[in-house]
Image (cartoon, rainbow, N blue to C red; front, top):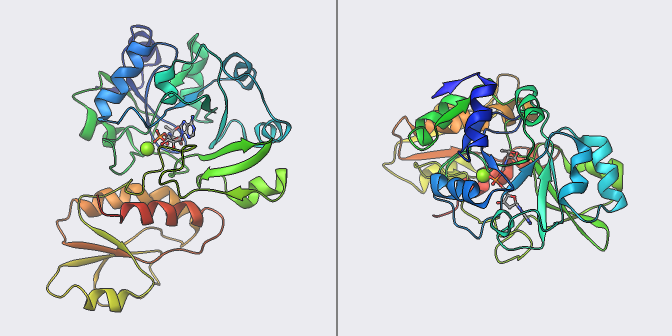
Length: 317
Ligand code: TXA
Ligand code: MG
């Protein structure tokens, strides 16, 4: 059921159930992060492999000390600059955090969301919320309550409706090595903004068999319709004769190459492309074309997160 009743959400969460929650990035599928039995239900509902760890959401920066044993100075700098907001930090966990949440890793991913409804919810709870994006594993992330209802409604007793997510791509994830930040996933806080606070930062977003980020599987955020991220639309069209093709354009002024098209943004800004990305991918997926084509956006600011999601959406499953 979809609703705006915070006390209803609190009741389900206190009873060890999962609840869909709005965040500024994407909707999450939340449960009590300190209760292994509740967290198991997240993995079951999403059909998520247990080697893919979850992000723990807290309501106040001062809660962080309860769940992590060490905060590097540069992590504190990032917290001061970007919390609450779309930034996740991976830090050494305390025993209180169940191993299931971190997939057995010694570190836990933590973030403090800025979405007002979820902040209010966290304020009403005496435990943090483990929450991955509320989509079936590998599929496009939800940015509206109705997306969660459509795909996980049968498995989730309650979905809090906080309106469309304003950022539209997941949080940026930053880990630390010898106290130095390492970007593990591009997301809602651009790397350029992070570097303004902590200086030049290493980027390690490719994952694969990188043990630090087991969740960075190459196929992710994927539509059912195959999607190709390409610089050369005409060449890609010629390589797929006889296919019905739809183009995702960055703005209405982009050349349509004679194809049917859907715009990712009215104004062409990276902010608005990010905000619309998953909703438009979902909508396009439902139209029944054989193939979705899209060009990469500029590899700067939010563009890196957008290209990353498009690239992973296009990887073979
Ligand atoms: O914006 C977001 O971060 C959203 C909203 C709901 O908060 N959540 C989200 O969660 O994107 P999810 O589960 O879709 O992505 C979590 C990813 C994992 O796949 C993994 O790459 C990384 O976070 N992660 C989590 N715990 C980690 C850990 N202990 N070490 C390294 N990476 C970790
Ligand atoms: Mg996800």
